Image (tube, helix red, strand yellow):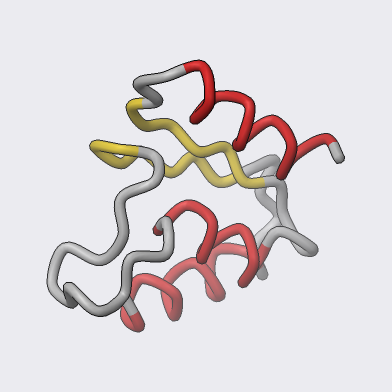
Amino acid sequence: MEETLQLVDKLADQDLDYLHISVGGFWNGSIRDDNNQTSRVVMIHERVGDRVPVMGVGILRTPDEVMKRLKQVYL
């Protein structure tokens, strides 16, 4: 994930309208480190969201998962 964060840092410094991040499951954490279960989209948003809008796409299976995400974005 560190390499991905370095890449999005560089991308965020470009004149982009937004970053589109697509993952299998929105809330899934690292695919290589079982100890890091923070959503990859959330990690990217925390890293560069103040410089470029981040659009995250991934499976949200339940209404509770959708509400959790909406609360992060809008509240």
